[in-house]
Image (cartoon, rainbow, N blue to C red):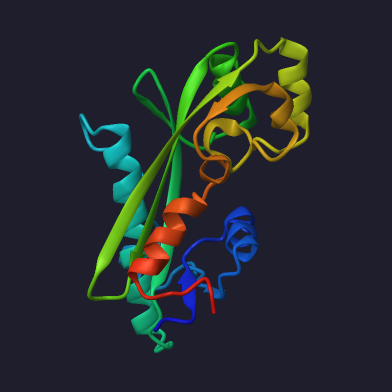
Amino acid sequence: MTNRIYLASTSPRRRDLLRQIGVRFDPLVFRTGERGEDTDIDESPFEGESVEHYVERLALTKAHAGFRRLRWRHLPAHPVLAADTTLSVDGEIIGKPASIEHAGEILARLSGRSHQVLTAVAMSDGERTRSLVSISEVRFRPLAGPEIRHYLATGESMDKAGAYAIQGRAAMFIEHVDGSYSGIMGLPLCETAALLATFGYSLYP
């Protein structure tokens, strides 16, 4: 019976979501310069790759990389959980903004229309690896230029897939959600709980 896992993510939102459902975990941070070939996971999409395949591939890559680090550091062998979130607009992958200007361009593109938020969650124990993908639809109301600029000034856009945080001030932009709220935040709890059960982690001690 697994009673603890590692989370291969620096996201405070994912940590909070795991705590919300009572998961006991240790953060597995990827230190810069450690075993150079895995220091940075290449997030470039493959040519012709679908958005769903892309986000699942990255989550699986992160889970595998996390377990390798576990062995390198001679840490106790608990399963490693990883996740990746991206947006899809007209089938195009929309990730994290590269700059404030880029964030503004993304928000302007999302204005007054629907987009998909895909979050893949993956677990590995070194022998088995499993993954699930959550797909949600989010519709933004039309956004005026000044309110986009005001939102950008909060700094909330940076390091967020799609340049917004649904649990933050961007909530006032959202007219409709169809899917998983926690998945849009970055960790779909229904799918995560299913993976935990597969690896023998009990949420009901």
